[in-house]
Amino acid sequence: MFKRKNILKIAIDSPAAAGAGTLAKSISKNYNLFYLDTGKIYRFIAYLKIKFPKKFNNKFIKSKINSLKVKDLSNINLLSDEVGTEASIISKIKSIRKMVHSFQINLAYNPPKKYKGSCLDGRDITYNIVPDADFKFYVTANVKIRALRRYKELKSLKKKVTYSEVLKSIKKRDKSDKNRKISPLKKTKDSILINSSKLDRRLCFLKVKKIIDRKINI
Ligand code: C5P
Image (tube, rainbow, N blue to C red; front, side, top):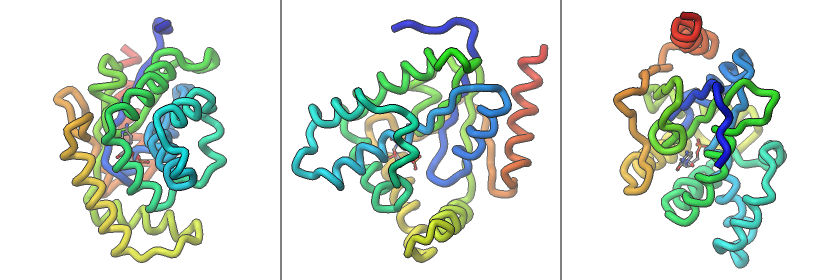
């Protein structure tokens, strides 16, 4: 695989609704990096399973992934809890992870030319997808705070959910993502821990920016 040289690579892992996506977006904008929300790809596959249950097999998934443009992912509604739960089920399947991995690795190491690098967030980015990232972060927050954030996000999209349903599904997803055998969510020793429980978006961004600037400005 072709790898662009001298690019900045940032890897972020986090449990659901910890604020990693928002953080990764602002970091990417600030340093002109290509941003990839890797959860969206698993959500996309989960959506395929829900929408086309009879066609759902490896060949079908592969053809969809091969023709997938990252911008297409914003046009489908992938945020629902149903899709998130299904994503944590299909993401345990080895053959599916294999297909997704090459797609992600290619974008991490060979982002479009207009970008100075890449920033990926997910569950196994720091040790599986971009193990040689220049910066690795593990972003987390108290589970009740995460559930409240996700609940507010879903409510703003006019979704019919209760806070306790969201809390339950986040807890279930945490358990599944952390305990699965293949590519579990974990904090690697070389990742910097960012606890966003008491930080708003801006403070979280400034904290991470400070860490990055300290190193790249030397
Ligand atoms: O990040 P998000 O909540 O959108 O991810 C949905 C699900 O996709 C996660 O709960 C996890 O099971 C799976 N996932 C994964 N590996 C990644 C990103 C997401 O297994 N790198």
